Image 1 (tube, rainbow, N blue to C red):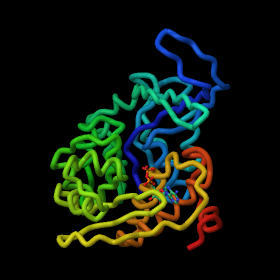
Image 2 (cartoon, rainbow, N blue to C red; image 1 turned 45 degrees about the vertical axis):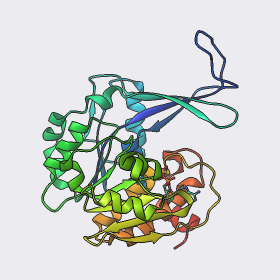
Image 3 (tube, protein in one colour; image 1 turned 90 degrees about the horizontal axis):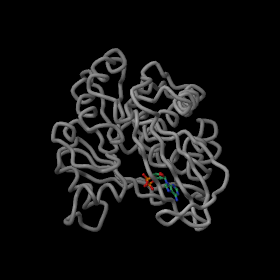
Length: 300
Ligand code: ADP
């Protein structure tokens, strides 16, 4: 079973001709509301593929919280671990201009109130999980508590997004640490090097048991073991329409397949198919394939 511990947000999207200057008001398109947040995205992606998936998260006691819970349940996610109240549901206020550029304000809301105490109180979920997957849209202290609460033998997958300095205790638990190019560069800083193989070596030196770097249309690269041997996993070629949430779908699929016992390159080969399928459709959660849709859109 996969347990996702992370954020759930309502994405509120309005199209605008141009962004307002300070003090100015502009009119935009009709509002679109989409379920999002990296934790919510990962849970939906895994459940749609057929994984037994639970979400540990916090939403507000409000209409956005209901919307997010409904989206999780519709995908088949176990939501007993979704806590309600304490602050408004997290929202992302997104304006999109005619060139497709986004400007985004995130109000973490309830996500910022998912506490280490909440993790300790969710012992039965954590002890049932073969794989636990987290991101950094919840407090870092909370992620550290997840690492301390893992059942022996459970596997911890972390996508450090938005990127932040990680304590050694968290890094040491990651198996793998999953980053895109941007996250790799932020974590490694100035001496990151130019090639993904350099980033993998640099990231492994920080202490995770394994590393996966996603490379967009190029697929992914895995690295593990004391030798840090890097393996390139090419992506299937697809017509990309919208890459929103592709990394979340990739990471969820990877974690699930690792939990089934696949080795890292094999699980990554499955995950790049899922990522590729997700970019062929618009949206984040709306774009995630079922197993049947995956076989159809991106055959093995
Ligand atoms: P993020 O979405 O976090 O920025 P990436 O852009 O690296 O991460 O994409 C994550 C995964 O989604 C990739 O590893 C790949 O599997 C898939 N993907 C993203 N963009 C494309 C694309 N243009 N064509 C095919 N697959 C893609």
